[in-house]
Image 1 (tube, rainbow, N blue to C red):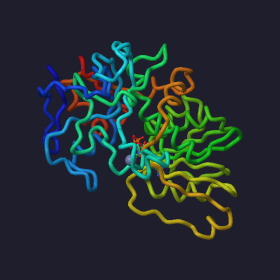
Image 2 (cartoon, rainbow, N blue to C red):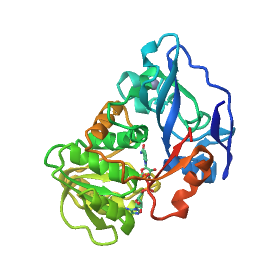
Image 3 (cartoon, rainbow, N blue to C red):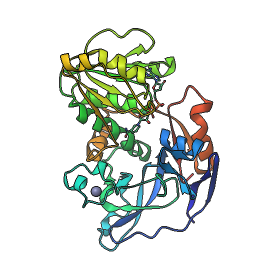
Image 4 (cartoon, helix red, strand yellow):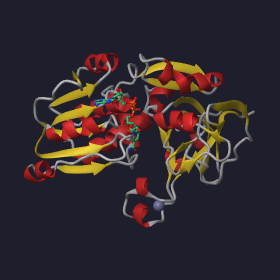
Length: 333
Ligand SMILES: NC(=O)c1ccc[n+]([C@@H]2O[C@H](COP(=O)([O-])OP(=O)(O)OC[C@H]3O[C@@H](n4cnc5c(N)ncnc54)[C@H](O)[C@@H]3O)[C@@H](O)[C@H]2O)c1
Ligand SMILES: [Zn+2]
């Protein structure tokens, strides 16, 4: 049996039987124990597409997964059976110019869970390249391990911004990504971390995690060395850039605004660096160790859990409940 959460068309998700995956020689077969719901899963569910990526054939959703190895391919160490692993959802080709330059997140041939036509991980069984099934440190449960995916976005953002000890960091957007990125920035040595949002509920969680939480509708005061833009709101980017100190670094993590305006005089006079971010590369071991050390907490970020049959409810949670953050599906329940 391999019951899976399959998206057939917008708002048409069915839990149905899929073929038992056969691991290739370099793969492991994993029984996912927890899969987080990301905004991209919700977007595919609501609209059947994200930009050029269109769901043309039924597709299994979910890409923030962890589980237990139940079988290995011919070239994989059989001792891995029984291991708890966090699944890095994008497997690159390892041979293109970007991969060879060490930027495998930019590999144009990457095979990424739940990006059409590739099936995702909300299933009872899934096969993945063994090198992308990362061993989970002792003490972490499967749900925390699954959160290594959004934590990885935070790790990559902090690395792209060069967050270093002493930095004053501004995170715009207190969604799951912003709240995790803020914790990563603190772990990387930030002197202060300020988080903005328009939701009082989400600002409350930011404060519970020990951050200064500011209403994004209020004028922003203070100077920051780093902006991690995690809201996708153009206004947050403009306000955040204006609050950067000389030599400040801004990273555009949030998606949503197609264009943002850039104050050229400000970027020049303060020598501001602005960069984008696409997923992550080489972040899983760091993300997992930050989780294991307790420096990144997911207990306040994961607010709702659903069994496999409740995947529909998990995907509609955000629009139904303003007091929610991350939903997790437990595919074996
Ligand atoms: N670049 C990448 O590879 C990558 C990877 C993962 C996620 N993302 C993006 O990161 C963003 C955050 O993800 P999430 O899951 O936390 O989403 P989310 O929608 O849960 O969080 C966004 C938050 O921004 C807040 N917000 C709205 N307007 C604001 C403003 N003007 N100022 C401050 N906050 C404001 C919202 O209230 C919300 O809490 C999304 O846009 C997502 O698409 C990008
Ligand atoms: Zn490549």
